[in-house]
Length: 496
Image 1 (tube, rainbow, N blue to C red):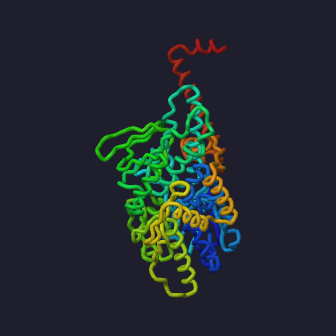
Image 2: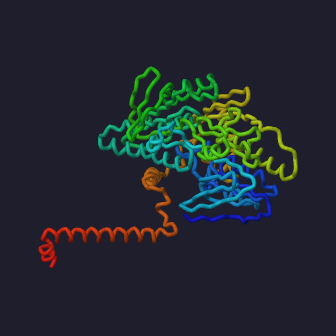
Image 3: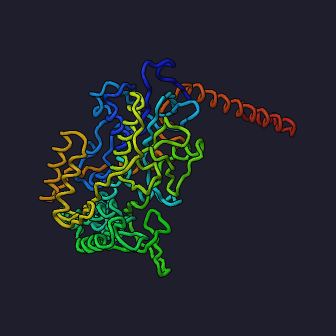
C-alpha cells in the first residue's frame, strides 16, 4: 500500500480532524468556521447525506443530488477546511493520528483535537448474509439499488404476465422494520402501486400489489407511543399495507423470506423485493476507540462517553451522533447536530482560555414520520399531531434542514408533482444499480481490485513468471518419468 503523511510536523495552528460528513461532521465543521484552527474532514463519501429522505430517492420522488450535495461545495466558502475522501480504518489515540484508506492507499492525519462522527450502518442482528437479498436504507447506493429493484419488479411482472406466468412474487414487497424509515417506505411503495403506476402497465394491475410491513415489536413506531402507533397502523392498512407485528424474520433468500410469529408458527412470504429497515449498528470505529480507552460498548456498538462527549482519559477526542451511548439518547439527526456544535464550542473555548461548558444536554425538538401524502404523525414535547397538520409540519422541518437553497427549491417542485399529482420524476433505473454491489462483493478487495495500485503490474508479472517456471518444472519431471520408463523415445519421435 502507498502511505502518505499530510500536514507538516510543526503546524502553525491547532489541528482538528473531523471523521464523517454526515450531520455531526458537517455541523461540527461549520461551527468551527471562525475558530483559529485548521480542519481536515475525512469521509468515505464525497457528499453530505440527508438520510431521512433516502426513501424518497428509492421511490422516485427525489434525485440523489437533492439530498446529497457535494461536501466540498457546501464547505467551499470556509477557508480553514480541507476535505479528503477516505474511509477511516484506524485511530491511534497515543500517537494522535487518524489513518484513512481509499482504493488501497493509506493517508495518515495527525490531530490536536478529534471529532468522530462516523455514524451508524444497518444492523442485520448477526445475519449479515441477509444484506445481499434485502438492502438497507443507509446510503445513496442503498437507495438507488432499491429504486432499481422496486421499479424493476413491476417491469419483470409485466413481462411475466405477458407470458402467462404467475407474478405474485414480483408484485409482493416486504419492508422489515416498523420504525419511521419502514413506515415511510411501506407507505410510499403502496402509494406508488395504487396511485402512481396504475395507468402505466397493460398486462398487470399494479393496484393488486401486496405491501407487507413486518416487525418483531408489538406496535408500529414504538418511540411515538401507543396512541400514535395505533393511528399509524390504521392509516397504513387504509393504504393497503399489511401490518404484521410480533413477526421475526428468520431467513432471507433471493425468492423470499421466512417469518416466525409469536405463536411459534413459521410462514414463508414469496417476494423478490425486500427492504431492511430494522435496527442500526454503530460504526466499527467505536470498537477501535473502546479497545484503547476501556470505554464500554452497548449491544449496538455505541461507545460510552463522558458527559462532555469526550472519551475517558482523552479530553482531546469527542464522539458525537449515532456512535455514542449516553443518557439513552436516540439515534436521530438532532443528537448529532447538537453534539457536534457542543464539541466545536468546547474546542474553540479551550483555545481562547474559556472555562469548560456544562455537561452536554440534548434538547428534544420532536419526532416525525410521514405515512403518505397528507398523512403523518408528529410528536413535539407534549404535542401530538396526526394527519395533514403533521404532514405540513414534516414538510417545513425537512425543508429547513435540506442543505442548499437550490435543493430546497427542487425538492418543493418534486413534492408538488408527487403529492398533488401522480408523477414521480426520478424513475430511471439501470441493471448496474441493482447488481453492481453484488458484483463488487465477489471481488476479494472490492473496488480496489479494479484499480492498478503501484507495483500491481510488477506483482502480476512475477506471478506469471512463477506460473511459467512451475509449468516448465512439471514438464521436466514428466519427461524424466517417461525416460525412466523407456517411453521417452516414443514421445520424442511423436513430437518430431
